[in-house]
Length: 263
Image (cartoon, rainbow, N blue to C red):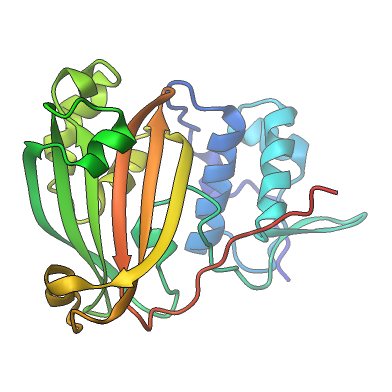
């Protein structure tokens, strides 16, 4: 166990808040990133609420709320009368949070990379128009990539965003940044999150089906191979702005969903 009383370097960095982002979310994100990246070591004691509040320049209430969420997610443990500590074993995250698919499918023992395949403007399909509430005559951006684990394909990801005024009227900044972030070696969702864009009210649906010839070629499996498809829709500012389809090859491993008893 390691106990620190001096300010941690990560906590001395200014806390950046995206427009409309709750402070507790920003605090949660900063601490969670520090824990998962190893900046806070396993078993390390965190500063107390008052100290965290002073370091991050926010009130105690959002700090307390963020710490409670981190404990619910298994990243922190409380030792009564002593303080809060980073867990001794980082849980592998599941689908309970809206996160980039390369993060959801990550394995701490393997290297995950994103290989972009195409980024194009095309007429909306039924899949896109239904999930993004777009007219059938509208255009939408599609970004397709393959997720590689230790160099082997484990999933394909298709991401969709509205085009033209359907995008810029909701977020002029995303519209202005889109061409640049589409060139980055990560999913669009990961790039948008990294740029401070906050998506809320997401829905993820899961179905099993055959890979089919196109997906099978990308995943290096037979067309008849069973795969899982995760369909993600997310809102920005109360408007559905992001839709994605992630096809996961067999043999990836398990994914978890945190559950809480309402009683």
